[in-house]
Image (cartoon, rainbow over all chains, first blue to last red; front, top):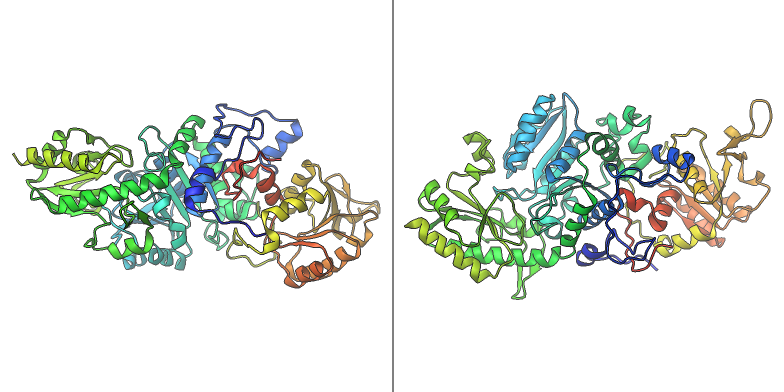
Length: 437
Length: 181
């Protein structure tokens, strides 16, 4: 009997959680405890030596949090996951475990503003340089590689630029230089897109967005693909004895989940951005319905994009699910088709951007005129969310950095929610009418 | 945890789903339930080596470990050597009692004679560690009626199927509506 291969709809509900060994509880128990007892001094020693698996302290691991880690790893087709207190914490965990002073990163220019700041300001302060390149051009990644480059970082689907990355081409560039490709897969979610299938080595998520899906809880998850050859001579921290963990050689000891273990033991344990058990549980309630929600987000977003395209008060629309999006072919290749109940559409997620005629002032007026569309700095909620990135999420960037990140002055970003789509179109229409007045 | 012979050239980690019929979860569970005495060929006495990690873990989970390594079989003063508190033997043939499983931490090219010895001493299973998959040895023991596992770590599989690996966020691929037993 060979093992059955389960589909994502099943994994979203079951992966990482079988009935509780102690009680038989079918739903996931919340292990709200800081610490776990040792059976004996010998048991404690084995745990600290990493010779046996077990829980010590919830900053390192927690059974409720581990269920989220395993479930997202399974949904991504990765080997192992590691959760953190936010998406930014997941990203810093991936980058700071990998990089050290004197290293160089090649990153897509069209990134979430917080990611740009982390690379351009914070990591630069630690002597790590980043070159930002045009995400739509794989050759630009190749041209920016240096001998000290140790990571390539990009988003599968840019927020808010909605640039689509040719992941296989950029993975080839990274691997030709012996460095891993890190992909932020927050916007598609693991239901619509699995970057590891296209060559990514590490995937990061803000689980606050579609994974949680209800706008209640902050969380992040990093997933390790398990195929990167860490012993290629460029990553001594993976192969040499760890001074922070009494001489363990992570790659030799943990093999295809060595990066996750190193991030857990050398980063999470030290910097401490651990996820609480209760937060992990709340995110997992969302993950169980991720496939259903993503189908509706995609279907609603496509209808909204088509409506905006035909609306006289709108100057432009950017939605990768539209056939005239310049990278629509990549969307078809890299993202799942979803059944909407009225036929199949390409799953381009629920995020879109558009320009309101009348520029910045009209955009602001549109946002202030909405009835139930919420003006706030999040995406991937059940609710439809709208924001003006140039004056909010990306305001810490210089104007040229804003343009490089795909943020135009008149741009409105919309995260299309799960409300009745006719009601969403009604709210857009009445707000556009007020913006025009 | 991956435990592979250090000399094996290793550029990409083995697939997480090797998927030969005989290495499915049901069979692995049966092997790990039935085999209680494990001869570990190539066991190191150094605490930070993968073979020591794996053997110590199995010992802690109530398996009897039998070290097999000529390097530690006899001490400098001529007395018998020990690893993990168990008498160490120079070869499988020297073990004076029955063993259920022969767990191999040796390079792939060295596995065939170990497989022949495993059959000779009446072992029930030949287990080749992660990164080790000698096809000839695999076929030989299978023909002789033994269970055969290749390219997997006995510790990782135990922790995957009986609990523990799930606590560090590794995808165990276990989907079930039953309590772990």
